[in-house]
Amino acid sequence: MARVKSKKYTGVYKSELANGDISYSFTFKDANNKTQRITVGKKSQGITEAYTNVKRIEAINKLRNGEDPIAHKKKNNFRFEDAWKLYVENKALSEANRKDYQGRWKKHMEPDFKEEVTLKKLLAFRKRLQEQDKPLSERSIDMMIGMIGSAIRYWNAHNEFKIHDAVTDLRTYDRDHVTKKEKKARTVKRDRFLTIDEIKQLKDAVKELHPDIRLFVSLALSTGARLGAIMALKAKDFKDDKVTLIDEKDGNERYTAYLNKEAKALVDERIKNLKPNDIFTLTKTSLQKRLQRVMNKLFNQGLASDDRVNRVVVHTLRHTFASHLVMRGTSLQVVQKLLNHAELETTARYAHLAPDAGKDSVKGLWNEE
Image: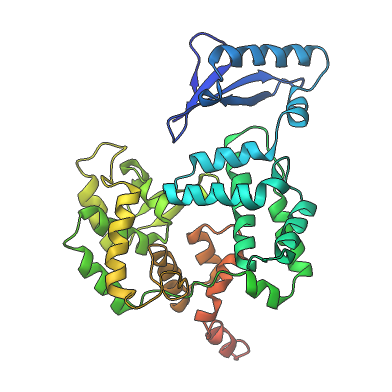
């Protein structure tokens, strides 16, 4: 929820987090008369309104004595571990995935990044896991580096005190120093997408299921949004044929997607009698499990459970959306925007689906009028 002012203390605020915890922060005017905000901590950590007020008074007194409260906080108090915990504890995840994130942190990431994340540390982290007695795959290593980047973006979206995104530095470094072969090895290959006939099969299969599942499938195929973004939608997020989505993977960034005719009809029918904050009745976990059972029955018979290349999962709907756009001639730049990818390089994995891209433009390039 939005920040709420304390009724007892000036400049003190509290925010309810997704997991039900309370986060406390305070504001003050710096030497340039600009408002600054500092997050003190959470109720689960023993932080209270009274304690937050004490920290605010301390910050104001330091400012009067010529000290910089923000620089002091950065130097003495902040550790990247704080950003990681904020991200993992509040990101919309199944409990199994949350435990997986926490396990990877404890086993592989914490020794290197507990205090801070720098390009030098990221390079050393990758090298260490590549050269240990039982090396991890390039894909697993890059997946963890991606998690670190997501945690940085999540922190920066929720705090006035920003931390530098060293993962972006690593991506820049890789573009200049890593070979195409090495990059290919690090890419998680998910080429599987549904054909037109398979889409029809899926739509027919979910018609008789809970209406939330049919609505979700339609929205996923119309927007390409991730599971968490769709399940977080409210009735107020829809306007005509547009929908405003929140990409929790990129620090709850908002972006716009569009509804096709089928999705709009289902949404209009669903929201006409709903309150602004309602739409789905199933939980994210329940919907995912029910839909995955249908997908397993239709498309995954005989496939190994760890076959990430050929198995159809809920996320396959996102790849299906992007793949069919590219095959219809949509530019990668437009697909990047619709998927809310931070980098075009991520979207470029769909480029092979458009082998004739540019054909018409080239054929007419030097034709005389």
